[in-house]
Amino acid sequence: MIAEAMLVMILLWDGHFFLRYLLSFGKGYSTRGWKPEVSIIIPAHNEEDNIGRAAKAALEQDYPNIEVIVVDDGSTDNTYKVASSINDPRLKVIRVPHSGKANALNKGLSVASGEVIVTTDADGWLDEKAVGRLIERFYGEDVVAVGGQVRVFPGSFLELAQDIEHLRIAIFRRAHEVNNLSLAPGPVSAFRRDALEKVGGFVEDPVEDYATTIALKELGRVVYAPDARVWVRMPTSLRRLWRQRRRWFLGDLPKLGSGPLKERAFLVISDGVALADVLFPLTAMALGRWVLLAVFLAFEIFTMAVAVWKERGLLREILLFPFVLWFWAAFYLSLHVYGYLKFALAKDEPVEWE
Image (cartoon, rainbow, N blue to C red):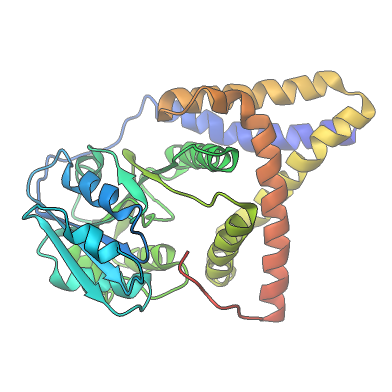
């Protein structure tokens, strides 16, 4: 009965989101043919290997009337030199002392001329239609920000696993957050300039995109543009991955702890399902419940197959998904237990810009 109970828990939880994901295909989402001037801000710290491609992808947007602002946040490599070598009158490159990502974004905001501010990362590559897809989602005056879909360059197995993770996030956001996005992600988001100025600019915080999203929600709606994509670099070692996700979770946790009850309940239930994702395959194999295991694998593979088709994923991500799901469940359970203990003991850790 233990294996059956865990499988039912997984199917009910994941099935709920997947069903809403499927239903979203027929609903569409509101858009508007608005064409404001756009300023794309790219904060960069020691990104000499990536900044050239990031800036060129921003300049090659299929959207009229843009400017691109690269803010070199006290880099000690050739980031400034590489960015400055790009010959395009729409590009501004400025240099500031190293003071963190939020301050770099705010420096860019101070020299930007656009009515809408788009942010992306120095190690990211915007899809050529990303800005246009973001802007069309400002369908009402109450929409203050729009977030897009983050994808990961699938180089190593760990990077592929992180792309699969973002496909799962895309399922959740299409299912539940099209018109009420919980996070406008730093690598691909757009903001009304006047709204940003009303909240004092980008919030200085270990997780500045989440903190800024919360602040903006006091003024209006933050919505999702599922077809506005950016491809980003992610950690290629477990050590760097742990450091990155630890920073994110420890930055988010105080806000989640003081947030609405439904957000805290969601976190607790998600951890319970993650535990079931870890234990169920092991329990099913130990007890010889091969039919149950086959049902689990078929369901998970099918959900990923649909996501790969809809979100422009890779075919190999379909077959790898059950193994990657187990990895992420174990990883996040470990991270959350660590975070809860840190939070309970009120031990602060230094924050670094990865």
